[in-house]
Amino acid sequence: MKKWLLFLIFLIPLFCGCNKKTELTIEAVIEQNKTDLISIHYPKTGFEKLDREIKNYITNTRLNLKQYIKENVYIEDLPELNIDYEYKVVGNRYSNIVLTTFFTSPLLAHPIHDIKTFVFDQKENKFLQLSDIATIHMGKIKMDLVKQHQDCILIDDLEKVFQKPNNLKFTFTDQSITLYFNPYEIASGNCGIIKYEFPNKEFYIPIEKTTLQKASLYKPNKKELSSKKPTIALTFDDGPSKYTKEIVKLLNEYDANATFFILGNKVENYHDTLTFVLESGNELGNHSYNHKKLTKLSSKELHNQIEMTNEVVKKTLGYDIRLFRPTYGATSNSLKSNINMEIVLWNVDTEDWKLRNSKKIYEKALHDIKDGKIILMHDIYKSTLESLKLLLPELKKQGYQIVTVSELKEIQTKRNEKN
Ligand code: ZN
Image (cartoon, rainbow, N blue to C red; front, side):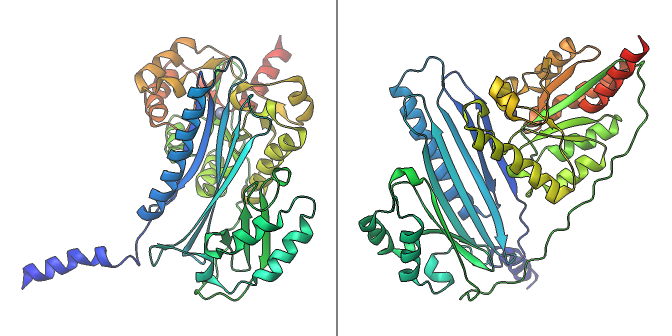
């Protein structure tokens, strides 16, 4: 009898998906290769079925790029692949994911854009189609689309796409549904990706009210700085990530602070982590919204990359960003004149993104670190976190004060005044 009971208890978690606790992480692949630039972000939700589909999409897109690169030769301007994500859970149950691919190459007249959506019911462990969620009035939508995109809509293609409504790409909130169309799907290429949002309040599926996340109120804490001690500024790019919290805990242990140059696309999903970053006395800087190479963008796109990040940080964390670090360290005169923030580069590159070995990162950093330097690291690698476990105690032993970029500047101003 006891054995059977144990067996049943063992089976419960297999059948009952209801209390499954999952934690969202955002996977990041950022590479500066000899043949291409790659920046990919996608959610890892903990729901195996959903994660597998997302991963397939990413893998196939990367394979296509590899094939393309093999067939062409590049000298200066490299092809760039950027996959960005949006992730929202509606009614504490439905994952809504949008993956947007942007691919540009000097051999293409225009960048390629591609959009892919996933709507997943966590409780039933299944993907949802448009017809699962609500009654859709296709006639009205088609009429609106024709009206809104008169100059590019292709009527025959539009009709064809709407003949298979369950293939339509969509996401929803408790208030509305959004449809997405790729370039050339229903219109000529000049209209790009078309988004169509319409209000909808009556769903077939049950939707709980989502509780809103409270914005934190950031209060800077002033700490005592010495202008006599040797001082360095630690900086971390490309985060936040699943390692950021651990890094901050480590910094706290050694009474150290750092500047985190973050990507706007991860701010909402890492709200708790970023609150902890700020509460521990660290500083946030802007590193664009989704890590596109900025020197190639139009001034409007550049403005979006920067302002979207500043806005989401202000909205969710109540913090004003003042510092900016360009992606791939690439600057140009037009970039400088278009940015209304202080640009911060670095003078010690630990090459953690390339080395990916804690001992080597530690040795490289220790070799190059001197008073007054700004150190570049990335908080998206486990090896970087591990290298800090070696580096921080050693730097403390050598008497270093480890501070944010703004604090380092403050100290340098004080030193200059004295001289
Ligand atoms: Zn970067």
